[in-house]
Image 1 (cartoon, helix red, strand yellow):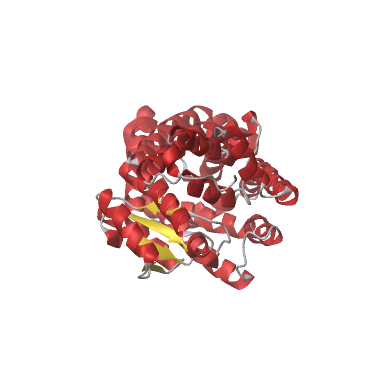
Image 2: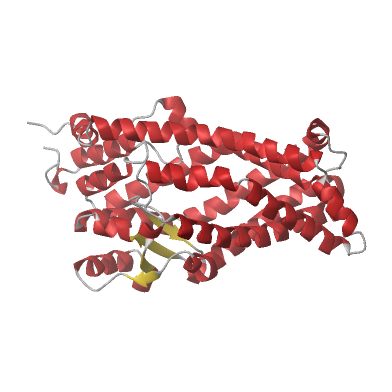
Length: 392
């Protein structure tokens, strides 16, 4: 009897059971609505700051300070105060809801502590970045938005470089994969891809999330592949090899540089739109600030939030292309389609595996699990030596 990729895919997805599938669909749809409500929250925060003239009052008190210091402090103050204002929203979306769906076991105190670290880092780097943006507006005139792409590329590259070294260790403990069959297998995979084995790490991802996950981060010497302890504990050796093959694919195919280029181009577009629409949007909120006036920073941040939401289909489409390419790399190099499929099904617990086409286009940064499993099964059908299906 010939192997049927469609039947094998159905067997993998249906193996989750109707209750788990319904829960995943509910969680996913709720998350999609939250992304829209996030824009509404951003608008309310902007309205609050503008109507209470919070940055206007602070700017008056900083009148004797130099332009750069005043601009940095205004940006930092808004980012810090807005984080405090939206703390209840963040608690609901980032902790309470995740706990209710079983996606995290992190204690509230630890979540708040790590959140405080994240806010401090975001305020520092965010204020520095927007200081650069306002400097471009002052120096580059009407074409400042063109130069914003270069600044965005520099900022993203710096963050990618320092994040694995200085930032990520603040949130998780990264260690070499312990000696044993798993490490031995991963060392072979890394060497075949030209990656030093000491660039593959295990981290305590279970501290924040119960999700089955791994990632690639950093650039140059700081680049590394990191596997969550959730994935390592909940996976077979073949599944770990298949997932690591996927992450190595991101590394070898240079997807990190695609991210830098895409986000830089999007920055140019977003800041171009901000330049053209700022005055109109600012007046809607009741602000008299011009685009280059840091008193209007709340309006600038709302515009970026809105545009980022509207641009998410573009970002998600490009991300899905990269994810499909990484899956293909794993299949070609590791050739474990059933292991990749069974590992992907574990991610369906928090990502509806069967979205409709419109939902997938707008909201999914990865192809649907059903689509990815089907690709693995089609690979298996074309390469029967890969072995028997786990669903047969």
